[in-house]
Image (cartoon, rainbow, N blue to C red; front, side):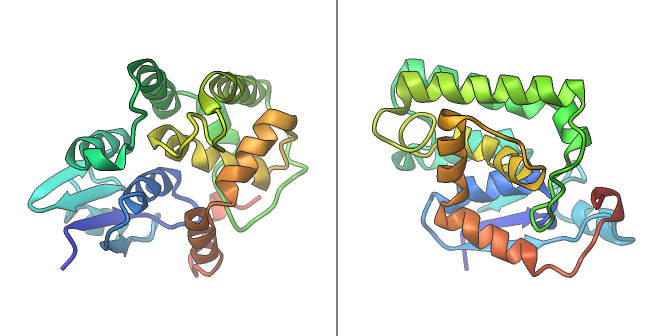
Length: 217
C-alpha cells in the first residue's frame, strides 16, 4: 500500500490539484491517486469524507491529513528533504517561497477570466486589463528568476522546485488562451509543458468524460 494518497479534482480543470500532483510526483515513489469529479451532485459529500476543508487537493500520509496546495508543499519538503523540493541556498529558497505564496494568493483576474481548461483552445478570448496586468507580473517573475538563478537548468531556479509546480497551471492557461510570450518566458513555459509528468496529466485530462459548462467558452 502506498504511503501517500492524493485526492484531486478533474485533471482538465483543477489547477490546484495539478500543483500538488506535480510536487508528489517529484518524490519518485508510488502514490495512490483518487480523482473526485468537480461540480457534480455528490462532489461535496465525497470530498468531505477525506478533506476537512471540503476542498481538493488533500494528501493523506501515514495517518496525517494535509490540505491546501501550499501546505502540502511544505509538508512534502519537510518530510522528504532529500528530494530538495525547495532550492537549497537560502536566498533562492526565500525567493521561491515568496513567489509561490504570491501565486497562491494572487492573480485573481487571470484565474477568473482564464479558467484552466487543458483540452480546449480559446485563442480569441478577450484579455481583460486585470488579466493582462497579472500576465505581465507573472512573466516578470519568470524573467527575473531565470536571469538570476536559472543557470544552465530549464526552470526558475535551475532544477524543478515547488515554485515551478505553482506556476504550471499558468502555463496551461497561456496555451489554452493563446497568450503570446517573448523569448525567455516562452522557453520556460515550453520546458514546463514538455515535462513527462505534465504530458501524463494532459493526456489524462484529454480523456476525462466530465464537462463543466461554465469553463467552456
